[in-house]
Length: 113
Image (tube, rainbow, N blue to C red; front, side):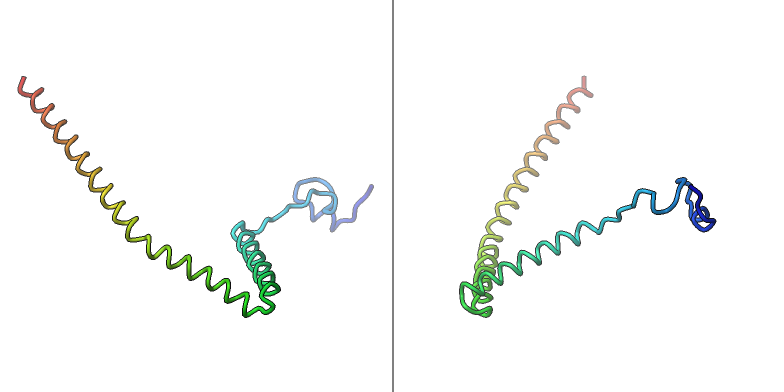
């Protein structure tokens, strides 16, 4: 089969006309897919709650209540978790300091011999 000159000039080295080459798929950024999926879920949830509450404002109020409850729970527990983490970090630092001191003492004894 003979191809016209523009078809042959469009050849990028793959050999053959452009329509017979495998197509390159350029996938979108995966982050875009996640954001679109989350927005779709949010839309379905809003529509479902709107139907259940018989108004979109009522469904939005239910979702606002869920968000407010989650935020208040996180704000209430965050200081407790931070205090526990600080105590654990302090204990680990003390343990590491004790181990370093013991190692230094052992090294000093070895050098004295």
